[in-house]
Image (tube, rainbow, N blue to C red; front, side, top):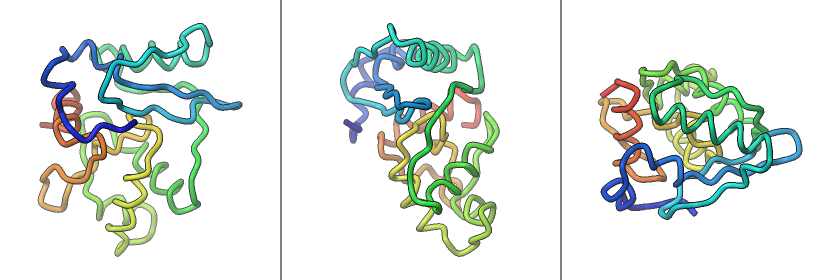
Length: 158
């Protein structure tokens, strides 16, 4: 369940954010990392889920800046191209929706990029929090703008 409020961030310390991410395993890799409004328990007895959990925890504690566990990226060819482009945005940097559209060779597809990112099942892995409006403002984040702001502050880009 995606959250549409920032209540969890108001009540939980940053270190506890890991417990608000649901990690879902597929046959070849992780298929979803989704922010939830309430604490979730992930099956860390599964080695792949445990690896993802530990890497995300280290990212949220600012111990690591990349996530490299196996993933299964699902979606349309357009969505996949958007996700792959967004995965290239460096830690601590932001791109606009227009820059993502240009990176995939569709310079007028900013709205379509936003639509694809709205369906992003791999939060943090496909770091859509690093995509901002053309004026640099924080817009369009399914987990809530305060989560986006928190993640960008964590990465030093705000």
